[in-house]
Image 1: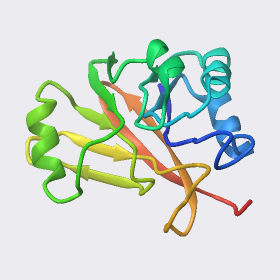
Image 2 (image 1 turned 90 degrees about the horizontal axis):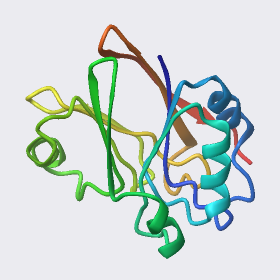
Image 3 (image 1 turned 90 degrees about the vertical axis):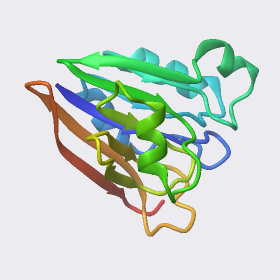
Image 4 (image 1 turned 180 degrees about the vertical axis):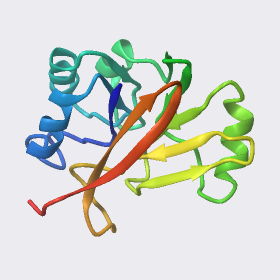
Length: 166
């Protein structure tokens, strides 16, 4: 099962459209994760239309229209691998321990907010993934997104994709 992970798209304030490599990955994915800060409903509509399955939440920059359509936290089980999606996880310091306590029945936590790619594992086994932002790299060298595979109930082949400058 092929996964696409993205967050912090901030359309149309940070970019007019989603980058072509992200859209190509969208068409190849079996499940798409978006960890919030859409900003506009048109991007949600696009991902809902083009995704086979969308697992998504709203973020701190998402207004009432998005909050009415999306949860604050989403959960999904894919081939016995338990995922949670949330926008904010707080400061980097202590993140693994804090998230493991908050999401005890989760194998993979997808989050956003910082625009900084993150891939770590908590002592109890929780994998934490932040795909960065495909449209607003902030102080990072590249705008980014992630892909991964779920196979035999395990997350594998996690890849961070650097996008070319706009």
